[in-house]
Length: 182
Image (tube, rainbow, N blue to C red; front, side, top):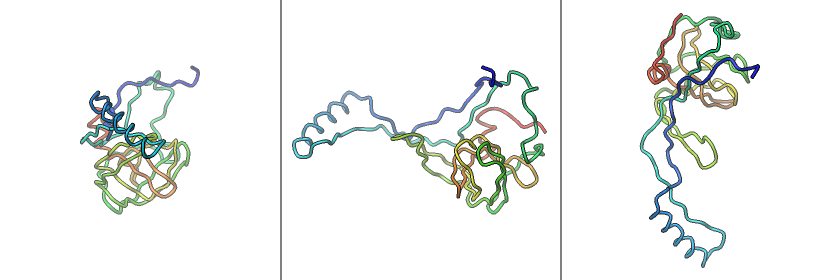
């Protein structure tokens, strides 16, 4: 591929909140229950799901570059990283995303727990997240979120035109086993 710049090196697997049950007993009960239900009300089906108690703190991956000549240490419209910072409520943040470009906002909450719909019928819980009023759209995921003084605060993973949610950078560096060099 002409547009390849690297390959997947490491990632943090997501823990699903629930998945369709593969238990034979649950399947038998669901089939029996569906048969009884369909005697009264057609076009319905009973399903069982297995739920998980675990939550996610990071949605991230790391690529191994084909060549360091293919990338720049500078972030488009922002510049070079000048360190790492802890996030505080009310802090001003910014990001340069693929879809929405340079946007900024204010941190509205820290340590937030929320459920994100990944696909139809697949929801995942995330804890220790940061919510800001900064705009973002699909395609911006993976953008670094920085303070006004260009210190890394987190990694964007979900958002809309009104809110953006990002992972705390300490969770990213811990889970991927990396550090920032600046």
